[in-house]
Image 1 (cartoon, rainbow, N blue to C red):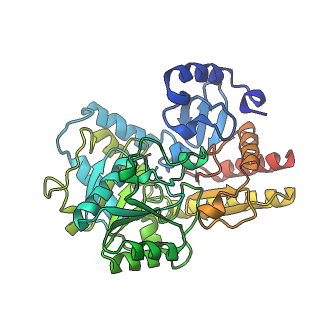
Image 2 (spheres, rainbow, N blue to C red):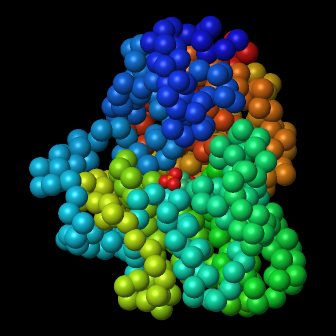
Image 3 (spheres, rainbow, N blue to C red):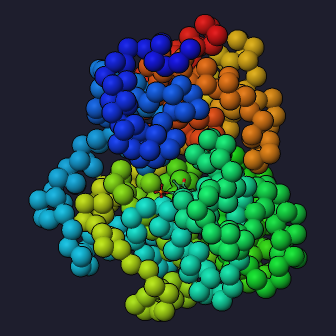
Length: 433
Ligand SMILES: *Cc1c(COP(=O)(O)O)cnc(C)c1O
C-alpha cells in the first residue's frame, strides 16, 4: 500500500504532480519526496506548536520539526514576534548589526569553548568553511570523515555520507571531482582503530577530523564510551584540528551541545538548525588563534551577502532564550523518555524487535535486532518494516521522518498530552500490524 491509497490527500497528490514538472523529483531537498516510504509527500499548509497541517486539512503531531531546528515548536509566539519586529526594521543591511553580537554571545554562553564565531546561512556553509579553515591553518589538504555521517552537500563532504544520500542508497555523488574526493578519507564511527590507521597511512597530511559527536544522520548513534576522547587525543597527537559538527546536536543533545555533555573540547564547532530558530542560519567558531585566520583579520576568505541576517539573528536569539533554563531541559527529557518507554512496550507486546537510541531530544527507532554502533550495524535495519511503521503512524496522525536513517526530534510544545496521543498511535500501529 502507498500513502496515496491509504489516506485522503487529494490536494497533496495534485500539487505533487505539478511540483514534479517544476522541481527535480518535485522537491527542493531529496528526503522530502518520501521515496523510501510511500512515493507521495504531503504538502504542508501550516505549522502550529507540535502540529503540522497538510493542504487537505489533516493534522499531524510532528517529530521532524523541520529536521531539527524547531526546538520551540512551530510558530512559537515569541519567535514570530521577534521576526515581525525585525522585519519592520528592514530585512537585510549588508552591514554589521547589534543582533549579531547578541546571538553570538548567547551561543557562547551555551558553548564557552567557542571563543570567536562567524555566521553563515546554512549548515553546509558552516562545515565547508570550517574545513577550508582547517586546511588554511594546518597547511594540509586531507580530511577524515565518518561513514554514515552527513555534513551538508559540499563536494569534499559528499563521500559515504548519511541522511538522504544513505536513504536513497546513492553511491557517492557524480559531479564531485575525484581530485576533491580523494582528499576525503573515511573512517568508521565508533571505531578508533580505523582512525588510527588513516593517521598512520597519511602522516602529517590530515588537516581536520570532522565528526557528528552523536551521529544523527544515519539515525541516532551515540558515541561509545572513550570514542570522542580517543578522537581528541589522536587529533592532538597529529596536530590535526578536531571539528565537532554540532549542526544537529547543538542545543539538541544537551543545552551546551555534545561538547558540554561529554566534556570534550573540539578545536572548531559548526552550528546550524536550532541557532536560526527556523530561519536559515549556520555558524562556525572555535579557538581564537584559529578563527583569526578568517578574512578580513586573516587570509582565509569566506563571505556571505545575507550572513548575519537580522531576521534570522532575531529568530535565533528568541529561540535560544526559550531554552536557556534547566526546567525546560528537564521537561524535554521527561517527555522523550516517556515516549521511548511507550514505544518499547508497544513493540514488545507486538513482538516486533526494535532498537531504540536517544541522546537528549534526538532519537531513532531502528527495526533491527542489531545494536547500532556505526553505519555497518545501522544499514542492516529493516527498511520495509520501517516504511510500514511510518505509514501507519501517518494514518494515526503522527508525522515521522520519512526514512529509517534519520533522527526524530521533540519540541518544548510536545506536552504530556501530545506524548500520550503519540503512544496511542504507536500502540494502534503495532496492534494492526
Ligand atoms: C543538517 C546538517 C548539516 C547541513 O545543514 P544544512 O543547513 O542543511 O546545509 C550539516 N551537518 C549536520 C550534522 C547536519 O545535521
